[in-house]
Image (cartoon, rainbow, N blue to C red; front, side, top):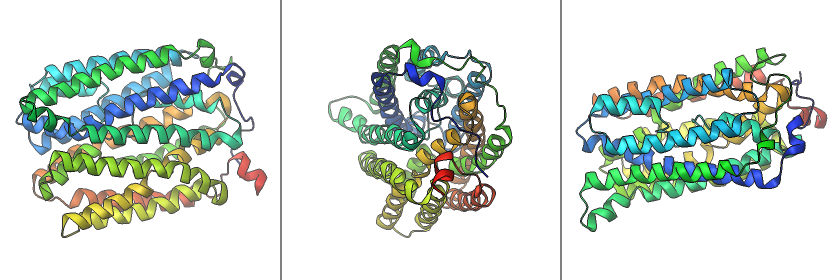
Length: 415
């Protein structure tokens, strides 16, 4: 069976100019740089304010839940062709979030800001920005180039996030210059706010014509509804699993399990981010040879096994080595998954499909960080990672079984 996407690009593609893609890539890089250091520092900041690992998990849950609900509202009720305006509004929200977190200390206030703001504890593709960017990017490419385009999009974000992780050591450098630890951490959230302004400048440079959408309302599902809902359900399993090991909690695990320093953690997440970035073009290359679905599954299962191994590792060196091996494989499903969703729906449904598959992922991932934080607080340090890896393997096997026969148009023609 073949997905219903027969047209290689949406009607808005004729208005797309190459500079627009560059603006989106740059904005993604700026945002992910901020997410990279915030996801590492979030647990440190909350701990410095006197909050427990369970509280870290609760804040992460609130952040993911709020982002998902906002994305759902944008996807279902947003005005067609308004992606550029919505991206500008989201950038303003990012700036407000950084300022509010820098001024906060009370847990209830932090929880509220995490819920309504853009704090991303996963340093990944969970963001209100993503569905709008996906819809714009998908309309700019021919079918044969779509996965490559998403690979570049992911590559630029991953490199920026890894550099952001390296910048997470900045509080230690500022401490050497006489800053208190809390002052240095708050300065990083002010930097996050400034990055929101820089991202808004990039979105402002995207021509209004780039947001042109089909006359038919594009935020509603049509003939692809059954496919999209099945994908959303399966992606939710993967996301729920991933919530047990979001980057903020993984950093907390490294701090508590192995007493890793902030600089060492930043260096590790930098290395893992670079490996993840290298995997994006590798995923595009591999998908042309074995298909999008096979690339998603056959790289994801080994990465989950590495995560389980790291959870049970007796020393820090082995744990870090397994986590780096996981980083080299775990993100290869990201550009292929995005490309697959855009391929198996009609062009008019792409924005809705991006939101409907993204939102359940966010909602599902929001449930698990609080559980992981509770397990860490109770002393079950390995269990969150083992649960994460095991559930992800189950997801991969289900995905392969349910969608083995649903091929993108380019693979159906090649077959």
